[in-house]
Image (tube, helix red, strand yellow):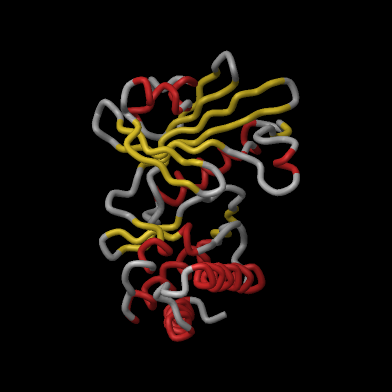
Length: 239
């Protein structure tokens, strides 16, 4: 990973092709002027998919505040050091896990713009080709028991490494070519493995499946699906 100082703050990058990236490249407006925006994903806020000159597809995401605070302060965070910024912390986790062979998107770059005591930030990761989030996938077709088992094992491998995912939910799991990926490591941590936070992580995931199913009654998820996931998980991490 390399870091350079800009007039606004800092840019860090992991991907060699991003060495010439500028602060403006973290604005979707720049990509729109080049007709390089090829898609978007809408959650609380919009994430943009852009095509580079080298035909890579990148995912551009700005860090927005949620909850009550977000009504008054949309995207400013207190600056306490570059390593503590949301974008740099996520980039470091992604780069560590990607280099270790975990199923995460390849990290590209991060941008931190300072204004006095505050900063806002953006991150760019590589788009996982052919991927759908698990809610989108299960709304169209089921996955079999073997795949639920494999998903449980995939989550267990992250947990055994000490990967705490702050928002482990069904939409932050991608399925592409029979392989499961975890995305969105904002506020995630690498910590000492412990059954307490690991169980809480799984409970959060179950709540998200149930929540999505309450909105989409035809979602291909059942108690049997969850039991198969747990069976796979416990085959590697018997908490």
